[in-house]
Length: 321
Ligand code: FES
Image 1 (cartoon, rainbow, N blue to C red):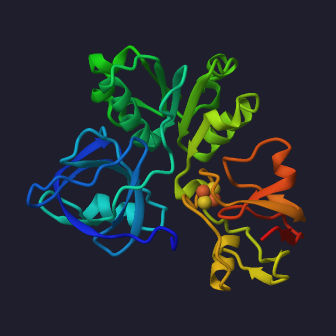
Image 2 (image 1 turned 90 degrees about the vertical axis):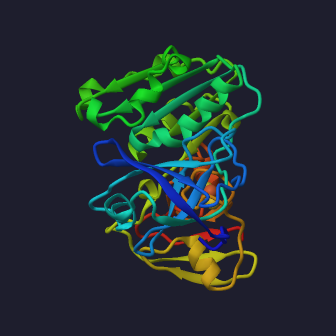
């Protein structure tokens, strides 16, 4: 991710233990016991796996903890190899290269309340947020944590501790859509709250569709790379940059943003997973296959998030860049 040039430092793995089926929890500390760079709830690290993959993981511990970084990694057997490399090979005592923390999923400093919706491994940034709120004495929050089963529920023990348990609902659907948790009663009335959602694309799309009546600035998503990853059905298309007149080909597996960079056209970006809103670009012509979690309703006819979205099949695009 070119916009996120990392300053690497090696941290020692002090804890490496299963947190749920296919999920490992790692606690990282400085080998000399030094205080670590501060972070805010919702932040993530980039890590270099033993096999040389570079990946992004949310911090799960509370920001007040300056001695450690806690991450949890879901082993994705059909992923690109980074998560399996960490889960299979990273052990206590190993050194792991990590970047400074960075935050694309910031917690609002003040709100009438906070609603958190986490699916699967999406609990990690949200756990940091609720740990932070609880440590500040903030009681106006609720977490709904959706998983398939008890065995696939990470951090179950932490969430059942007295400081959190009364504000946490854990629901297992067994993989059966008929057993899905009904979120609508929680989402019907925004009531000045801020909503934070992290999990699989299907969950985040459903939450986005149910929150069209919320103020856009109070709804926040954090996407994993797999939620917006390229698809085998993707086709090449052309994008025209209206300001310079440049016409660029965007091949499968390459985003518009990456194609622009490769051609020397800079553009602000941050998350590069369709959730922060930084790369919002005006759409002047063409039909879009929207893959972000930012744009909703009418905005989808006038704008595009160029870090993840592509041209709809058979279309080319003209954008205001
Ligand atoms: S860079 Fe965050 S939405 Fe595109």
